[in-house]
Image (cartoon, rainbow, N blue to C red; front, side):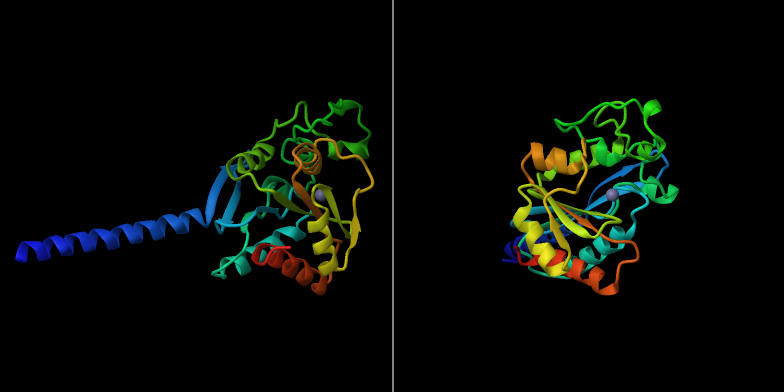
Length: 249
Ligand SMILES: [Zn+2]
């Protein structure tokens, strides 16, 4: 009898231990899922919350001098992480270009525009020495996917295959979509009261929209945040993104 009690106690302890291990594993799975050091020894981070519905990747910043989206994406994360039940799964990279953030440049530390470095069908090589001064900041590099920042996003895509990618930019004031992003963009623009566009107005070879939208047929939405955005616009953007993830669209 005493032995069987010991066995029961042992099995029960093992059960509790497994549950706590599972909980720890879940915490890890649901928070920081991927990190990578940049050439300037900063870190790009991808966080995750949830395991259901659509995988939605939110990128707060890709151009280093467009920083407004970093804070907004962190606010979205804070709200989503505090919820117990969410319809969709959030993947969030608050900034994909921390080196550019510190240098306050559109490009990364190699002077390459990450949003022109994706291996899209429309990627084109440009001789940087022949580019006009105002076009140098749009240089996509000597070859696509040459930059670790680009590869970080490609790796997140290869692991989690998000069906929708929402990316925050400045300094226009609109919501624009590529690929299958129309209904998501409509939903967001209605809430943020920003103009809805199906074309940003200039070609973007090697961009996230070109690669994941046009080539891979995902839902891609760009939210352009103006310089000095009002508090209400910032709040509307955060609320719209939280609703997209928490309740769907
Ligand atoms: Zn931008």
